[in-house]
Length: 62
Image (cartoon, rainbow, N blue to C red; front, side, top):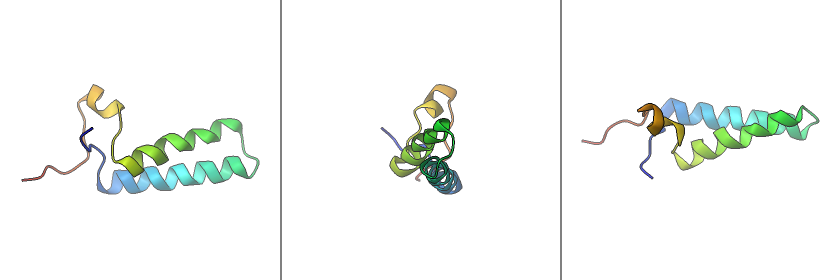
């Protein structure tokens, strides 16, 4: 797995993921547990959908 999530994308994924999980834990809708997905992809720096779309937000190392 090569990292394909970088910088701002990673921070946004972690923040949104945590916000959704907290909302779900505080009695929000069940679908809010989907926040686990962006949280996990932000932590491991890999999104399985990006290679399928030919995308990467991770800067290229020179």
